[in-house]
Amino acid sequence: MNTASFPRNHWPLAAEARYLGPHEATAPLDVTVVLRRRGAHPAPATWPPQARPTREAFAAQWGADPADVDTLRGFARQHGLSETGCDPHRRVLHLRGTPQALQQAFGVELGRYQFADGSAEMIGCRQPPNLPASVAPAVIAVLGLDRRPVARPHFRRPSAQPSVTYTPLQLGQLYAFPTTLDGSDQTVAVIELGGGFTQSDFTQYIQSLGIAKTPAVTVVSVAGGSSQPGGDADGEVMLDVEVIGALAPGANLAVYFAPNTDQGFYEAISQAAHDTANHPTVMSISWGGPENSWSAPSLAAMESAMQDAVALGLTITVACGDSGFTDGASDGQPHVDFPASSPYALACGGTRLVANGGTIGSETVWNELASNEGATGGGISTQFALPSWQANAKVPVGAQGFAGRGVPDVAGDADPNTGYQVRVDGQEQVIGGTSAVAPLWAALIARFNQQLGQSLGDPHTAFYTIGTSAFRDITQGNNGKFKATTGWDACTGLGSPNGQALLDALAAMKASGGKH
Image (cartoon, rainbow, N blue to C red; front, side, top):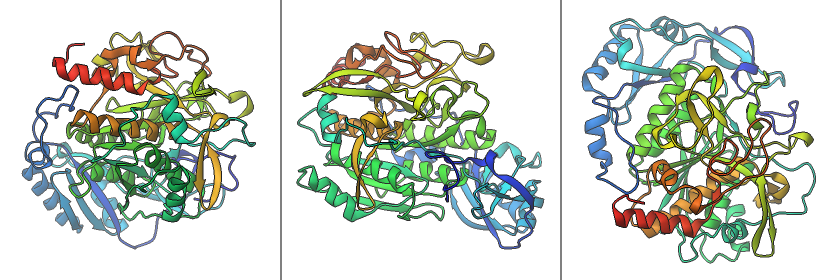
């Protein structure tokens, strides 16, 4: 995406594109129909571990109902749509048709949209599909009719060279990452909606840190997406893989490149969750957008894909945004970022960390809003109710009295002025943002999994049961509305990691069968 005429660190979302007129081209389009699951919703794989389904058993119990698939196939034939693929275990049916056939089948009007920078036109769709009563109950969402961006990457470059920067290894030491572990036998999935991966930069970076073996990186193309180095989003991609590669050098990385659309984002998460080739146990996501910028069907589809992932034992770490309590929305009202706000996401907030020798001298909420350098996201969801594991966290009531899920859950260094030393497109750079915190936590959890002998899965119940005793509780600062306080808060959650203490607490929970 050409962002030249937008402010630094600004990535436009769908609502910022202007309508140019109806879409009149005739080239076929591919859509993803997301189906409801059969049976009751699967429970997250929580800690301590109970019996967890294999991917094969999951498909049989919670995949798409064959009757629903048959119904949709009949509907597609009736409207002249062709089937290009079907993954019942992921609950998706892939269809192709002309724009005219798709508009008739799904009751929509496709339009042409463009951003103010004059970049390429996009196909958009302002209304949700309208399906007949015989089909509608089986369908969660039809993705791919709207191809405007749904997410922005949550990384920030400082406006001037900062005096305080860190390698991931230094932060791992400051946060007491368990020293004898390296994430061996784990695979970390990394979701990317733009940018590209450069192997030579990654290898040189890992070697520069004195790490003997460069982790294996597998690039996975999803829904027509691909690794395309040379743009601004390379900063996101290389930040993600370099933080994980440095802090979990024994792990493998699988990087899923998808288009920045609801279809691409859904497919990347779903394919990673069900990937029987790479078998990821942790998923890191550093992209998102304000909750109110998502259509209800898109949000529901994404949520169902994340539910699949945590039921299969993955832990999903997600950046919660870099624009303070508004999440970059222009109305000045509080907003949280999705997918960080999902109850299935370990939402990662940001701090400003200043070391004193080999220890942390001070750690406060990241807030550089006054100098337009960003601030951690955080607040109260308007889409997801307060989960049971946050019942005792003193989450404030949200807008219009809604008792919503509090964001974030955890935190880590994110201020670009105390940023991460990385290598991007052949250049040494410093980058911050909550985009750095999601891979930081993903690497830590990969180390945990190695020691625990099983994947942590959905960590919320365990983390909130353990409480701040195994975290660095951040008690100073604010994100423009919410203030840090003792215990959980809507800036830094439970706090930043005290890695070894948290691992010890998780191991004790496993030994005691969940009693803490």
